[in-house]
Amino acid sequence: MNKRFLAPVVGIATFLLLWELVVRLTDVKPFILRAPSRIVRHLVENAGDFAAAAWVTALHAVGGLLIALAVALVVGSLMAASEFVEHATGPVLTLLQVTPFVAYIASVVLWLGSGTPPVLFITGLVCMPAFAFATVDGMRSADPAARELLASVDASRWEVLWRLRLPSALPSLFTAARYNVGLALIAAYLVEGGNFANEGLGAIGRRAAALNEGDTLWAAIFAMALLGTVLLVAISLLQRVVLRWHVSQRTVRT
Image 1 (cartoon, rainbow, N blue to C red):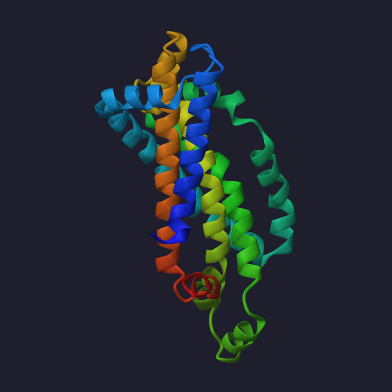
Image 2 (cartoon, rainbow, N blue to C red; image 1 turned 90 degrees about the horizontal axis):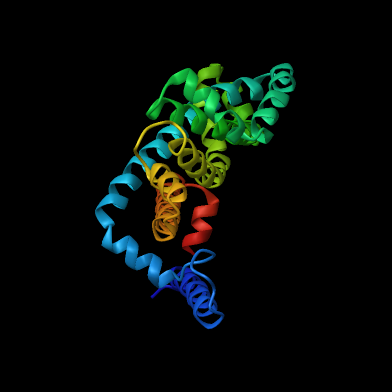
C-alpha cells in the first residue's frame, strides 16, 4: 500500500487504540467519555438513521460551501480589481469571520424559519470570507508576463479574468475549501440543532444531549468526523483533477 495512504490509517488507528486503552484501563465513567468500540457498535446498530442524517448534513454543508464560493468569487474579483473596494470590504469580511455565529443562530431561524434556509444562510455566511480573501490573493498572484501578453493582444477584462486571474486563484481557493469544510460542517451541525427541524446530525446530537444519551451523542460526533473525512478526500481528488496542470500537482505525482 502507498505510504501516503497508509500513514493516515496508521495514525487514526493508533489514536483510537490509545483512546480505547485510556477508557478501559483508567475506568473512565461513561458519562465523561465513551470507548470508541462502544461508539462504533452503536453507530453500526443504527446505521440507517445516521446515514440518512449524515446525507442531510452533507447537503447542507456542501450547499453552503457552494453559495459561499459563488458570492466570494464576485466579491473577491471586485476587491482584486480595486484597492478602494478591498479596503472598504476587507474589514466587513473580517468582522464576519471573527463574530461567533452561534450567537445569532436563533435570530436567523426566526427570520428565515425552520428547515434548510437558515442552515444554508449561516453556513454560506461563515464560509464566504475565507473564499473571498483566497480569491483576492490568488488573482493578484497571476503571472505578470501573462498579464502583459494578454494586454498586448488587447484582451478584454472578461478574458483576463477567465483565462488568467481565475485559474491563478484556484490553488488558493482549494486551500480555503479545506479550511471551510470543517467550518461548514460545524455551522450545519449547530444550526440543525437549533432550527426547529428534525433532520440532520445536528438534530440527533441535540436530542441526545437533551436526553443524556451518551452513545447517540458520541455516535453523531463520529459520524460528523467520518463525513468531514469524506468531504476532504473528495476535495483533494477534485483538486488533483482540476489542477493537474499546476506545478504543485506535478510535484505530488513525482
